View 1: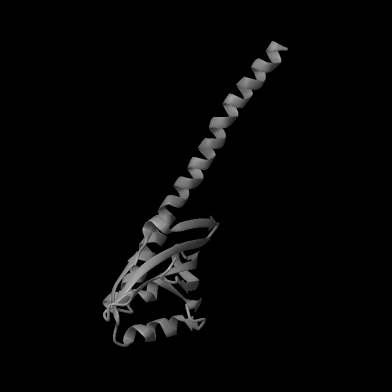
View 2 (view 1 turned 90 degrees about the vertical axis):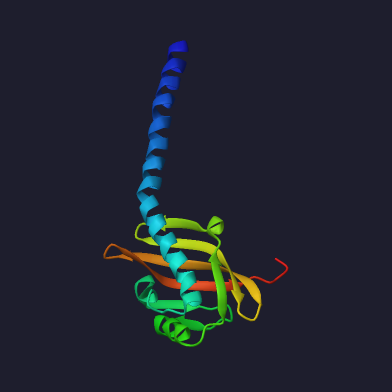
Length: 153
């Protein structure tokens, strides 16, 4: 009986490190992708402050379809057109501590939030979900949905 218990303890002690090592390897393999996507998110929020649509060409996929806080559906062309007008945005900050990513092969679901302030002094916060797909070795957002957070939240 003691021998069976000893063998069971030995087997468990050998399996646990392998399981945790496997988790660590999976996490490490996504760490580069995670940083690439986070960098794209940082760049995207600054597009509206800089009023420069150039970065949207590599951040947003040609087949992008998004939903804005007012429910309006937008394409990549719509996003680029928005940037060509005068910017009302004074600042826009990605709340990096609020960003969560989940990977499903070459697809990543990213949830997060950003805080913004307009030149007229109005400020607010959006929470959002972005869907990224890795194509030809590069991540691009293919879908996005933003929600304005009421002031009291």
